[in-house]
Image (cartoon, rainbow, N blue to C red; front, side):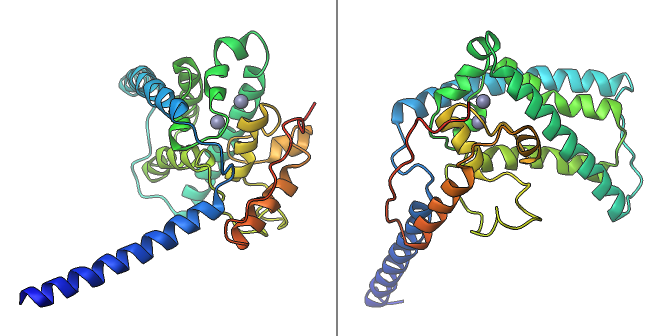
Length: 258
Ligand SMILES: [Zn+2]
Ligand SMILES: [Zn+2]
């Protein structure tokens, strides 16, 4: 290839990448839940806490799980499972974890547990993916401990087991992403409004109260702990993404659930 050709190719590639980056960043920018929420100092602290928490809770939960396997408390069904068996086992995990998380989370908002344990996670008022791991190691052990606990009580198929850890990671990262990717009709459809969105948990970090659910909105809806303005705020974020990053007035901080 001649030098001239090479140069032309690079130019085309350069322009193409620029266009893609522009579109992608615009896509994300328009979906940012708190457009002015990012602070470097918080990100730095989150990174430090994440490393400590991952090391401590990873070691503890890993050791406990290994011990439970070795002593036959946890075992799995190695035979191939039918799709409906995987589905049922997965649904069982999903809703039991959600229940476990909701009630422990509400408890962790009471003193002195809040100051001692959960407050650290709430240092992040505008979540990003690192916020997922920015929790007190004790809280991480409590939440992460659900999986070995669940596996000790229920013996499930290998195939379902393989789905649980990725679900845990994806849900944690998704609710702390800081971006709302769900479509506008999400909270209006009877089928989908029961499942959490990033805005739902983002508001929990912004206002410190209400919206305690981890996977679903079921317990918050049943117990009246959902922020009354959750749905209208979700609509505002979606309107903004539709209008391509036109900033809408932030909601006053005083709008909290009592
Ligand atoms: Zn909380
Ligand atoms: Zn959180």
